[in-house]
Length: 442
Image 1 (tube, one colour):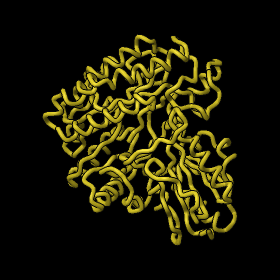
Image 2: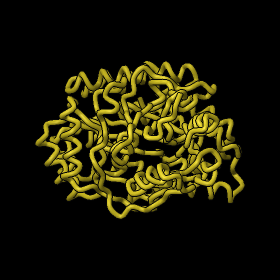
Image 3: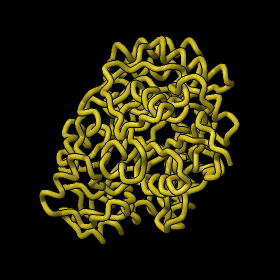
């Protein structure tokens, strides 16, 4: 097949499961924004094709001359394998995403160029260099302002995706958690888009026939004035939406009411742990686990359902505290809980801490999957941590716990459609867990 140098293939790889099998799904609900955004940043004259490997096969026989591959979490292993295959086929391969940004020297072994950090001001430059035969090894430029054109959502509408699309409000995070890749990339920097630009993208989502969207931001409500103005504008659009932020949003009920009245019905919170010592060890001492239950109750009172992400294996964790986490999740009726084993990812402060203390148990970073211990915990063995993690997942996703957290709640009477969706998500996660597969966001 003749190569088309004016065609670009952008790929979001799917991860391998614990058995080395590609994670595949019939539908991708949580669609990434990166690829439609890169398509919008591509200079005129280029054809762009997008591939989400979770729901489709990578077209290795493509005639595209330029291949861009993202890297998210432990899917980086698949990123590398895809890159190797395209290099065998003499394609020009570009790697980007946060895992590549954390380990650019390692990533360079498998591609022609790496994109480090944000691509708003480097993607078009890279494409032009490629066209002129002057590709650099590294593209990196720190953003001082977050602005970009409307993502090319139209390129993914024919795919098996859910009933909402992503829209970004801000990037980065003012928090400084040591284990977090966001902090290691942005070091407390947080950039907000102009509100008219955010609303422009939401309008585009509505024009395409969607009634809801996912507002992407690692801590959208850290700027109260911005949040109030944004919610006021969103309310005018009569859309439903989801987002994530810090649990301390519960301290501002006035803002919570504005958020809920603007159409927000689901929030995701990175609680990390119910153990204070563990939070302090992760540089998250500002969080108060003793207040979590009350804060969750306040948020739910305003008609907002709750999803959480938590980690096990931190400094204060014990086998007992991990078992108590299951009761915490059930008692607080958390609709969709997810868990990860605290993993020292190269490039993070937590990795440096564990390496300095000679506590890296597994040095093969390409085997890291967030469901097997790779460091030596303070209060248990790595093997005990891995077992406790799976025991936690099996307990939380028991039929009894699922019913208690979803159908047997007051939320079911008020928002039955949403709760039924959470119920079926839980059943799907349960089926995955029973196969020894860690649930991924769907």
